[in-house]
Length: 228
Image 1 (cartoon, rainbow, N blue to C red):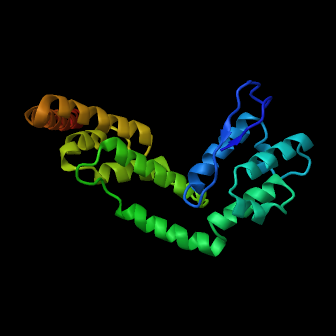
Image 2: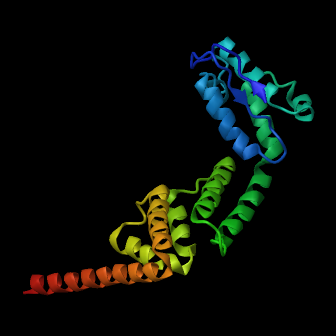
């Protein structure tokens, strides 16, 4: 890893480590690299690509990026004079030109459509896979928002979570729900079922469905009252 020099924008005395770029970690690397550059207030050299950026910030940002590259990649981008040029060159190398991006997005759409929670997979692990997919979309310039993630999550969890899925869809506007909130509700229900055991889980599901039935009956009664 490349060490960030002392005296950055955070003012701390401890060095931070820039992750080393590899052929397999570009998406994660860009997230970490941006965060570190931002902490040291030099991210604007990449974000704006403006020649008017403070010269010291520009040199610092470029040095940090070059220090986080393997030798073969470093030789490729060493002739780039600005941080933005280095960053864009890395993106072309690891993500591809527009035509390649379009093809990769099509493949990513198909991969997302086929995703489902595997047998025996932990809920947090599946949630992590969905969140990682959102990062991969962002890396290709497209947004995978909470609405799509929540719908995918609720549609692809196993049957044991159906009662809470039904409750979420009945009592909440899932188009406005954050992905983390949906995952948290599923996790809470799943943990409760696990604590009580299989029998307790079935009783919990029956109780939730009964509550939904009562709610529908209440709505029908209110509708009749309004008609009167």
